[in-house]
Length: 479
Image (cartoon, rainbow, N blue to C red):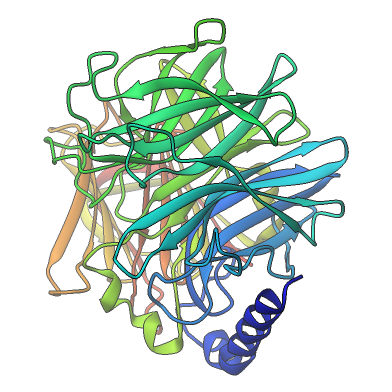
């Protein structure tokens, strides 16, 4: 460990200690989501199950609630439910990462844990440099940096980052998000035999390929994985214009379904599909655990005009990660659902059968709370609307005539209502997770998902059903 790295780590831990009581007492602190101990959290990084233990690394600025020189924070768990904070994995301490250890991924090889990340450098003249870097650990906790293993290729701007690495047929592959000199987003592929020496294999997706003429000015956080016999390329494009129900956040996250031809290094794919229909979801990453499940985490936040208005800023922290979600491919798309392990934190079960509401508001004495799981089954809305209001701050609304489902909340900046909407053929089931300041809503067994932060009155625990529907209801307190 260098002297600069030691000093940065010391200062980061001092910052955590300085504000830990204030952060802990924030009423919007979440009960069962991963959050920063202080400061700003964004992308999930390096997701892996290593030697039987789950590891989640994350982009972290411990020195403020703004985007600065990022560290890699680190949590570990044996069950993805109960987490332990580990020592900081990476600090921006070297010439090649002095302005941030940006996002990346993790693999295990020959018993060691390998972290790949982007080193960010900003020169005094305003120019940016990026380096793809490697750090290695024998215990999953302490990491030795090995410096740059891949530099910027010709034909691309320094917006070149977020390496995702995997192994196929005894060979290693890496994809990176990139921007062409024409300012178009793309994904590049590289190969290696030893994880240290990499060869370019070319562009596999982006503008000018597979019918995409113009699809954003930068693609971040690429991820390629197998699911249901398909190759899935997940990416977060920047610069998409809103189009009817789609692309209404500042930046988007979604996937292409296709097939990667490893002999010719070509990826043929279908059209882009958004992963999440809510307000606060970006930079998702997946990993495969020892049981073969494909599990996803996303950043439950996004850099936009709302960020300066988050009420948690006054308590020196902002943002969180989503719950872990298991992915499955069926009916031509990805379905997302909470992992089974989350059932372990259920308490105080309430079951109400044969609820039938007819153009009225309905509440239940035992169906209230701040950290709550709701399951609505045998759900029928044959005409009109169903609306569920969460703590007087956000609402889910299904319109059976328009076949639209919307999540609505109060805009932090102007106080007005805003919403996100998508189409569904019918509404048959809802699985809803409320935390103190978050909502994750799984529609029709994961066919669609809405993720959002919201900030209700801490004293308000009401859940109100109204409209025209019948259903069976289950509720648990979580935590």
